[in-house]
Length: 595
View 1 (tube, one colour):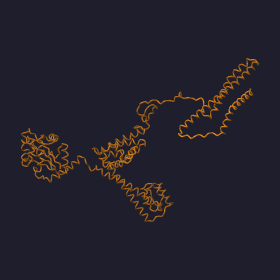
View 2 (cartoon, rainbow, N blue to C red):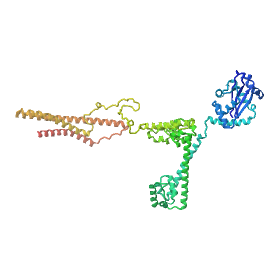
View 3 (cartoon, rainbow, N blue to C red):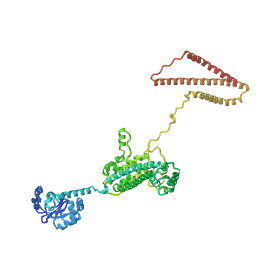
View 4 (tube, rainbow, N blue to C red):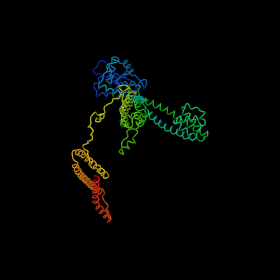
């Protein structure tokens, strides 16, 4: 056990006697200093306590106050650690200190005794040396205190003191939570397996019941109450099912296509139903127990993520203290270690959440912002875990406050307004003018978007598609002719009124000649345009051929045309100019006939 001495001594006090306060695992001891002169030589003081005889010449036991039990010893020792005298020590000093000077090793304790008991308390280096000597000869100076008794008392008090220092409490045992959440998960698996077995087994007799009753517990209760499906019409299921479900069940029982089952089979099915119901009841009881333990051990963690998620985090971390040592980034992906290391190995994106994904705050968030909310929740969860593990508070005020902040952040991320009542003028959303050049959040302006520059457009005079060239040229020619004819017509009508018939005949002849010339010029223009288009086509074909040759690394040799094909080409080339001349003559004849 722990052994501690507190002594005060003043070498300058000559008349008053000196007492030394020394604490043992068994109680408080007061020693009277017999030879104060030896205390002047501090360096040689240890030599006086090498033997019992020499030690008894220096100090003598005056009084001893024994502890009644371990709790009394623990309370007195904890107060002394905080430099506070206990009630028993105060009574003991009032009874035995009357005008004497008290020596104690802790100066703060001496000041407390002096303030409350009006006893002079002093401290120096000689006190510390005297305390070491008393500890060395303690069992010899105190009668009735044997070494074999002192050792177990010291061990017990040291253990109790360690528990107090660590603020150890049986209510803070997180091992119970780890075992409870493990058992709860196992019960869920077993309960699901048994319920599926009941459905499969009883489904041979009444297969329609599986679709009518979806809940496993209700299914087991119905099977236990009904037995054979022929009994369903005469039974009352109002305590288990709703009226609509009950009516549907009775109708299906009348026309059921299931096979007949013996009474022995039904008995075993009912026993399995009893097991399912018993497991469900025990699971509900275990969940209530886990909820109460979580609210006691980790109230802030429970307020943030819930009982089940908090318990799984503690179980995965090993203990609440080990979990408190983890940063928020580790808490965020706790439970997704396999996915994390697989992502690091394959150089893919790391997971954004682990066990914390099942928290209600992450479940409320939209898929796009689940990562942000899980990161914020993990940071607040790490703070709550540390507060629960190492803090003095027993309430969940910190967890509730952080949860409100996280809910506000969730609404902000989703674009909702906060703190406004519906229908009020202040609560109406503010309609702002849309500015496409303003960045979101930053408040700075970006460069305006470039508009379409129409001056950079290039309009081609002729179409490149050969299929659309001829009709376009014919339309242009027709438009030119109409415009020229319209320009000529008004001038001719004006001149007719002033000229004689002979002059009019001459003018008409001149007009005809001019028209013929214009027609010939128009034909020449159309021929020139056609020849230019043919030249462009040839150039494009050559360019296309050159590109094809570049793209194909090993072009195949072209086959030479045969003699017949050469002759056909020559004939066509010879006929082409004749045809054009013939067409010109026909057009001239038509024009003359028209006039």
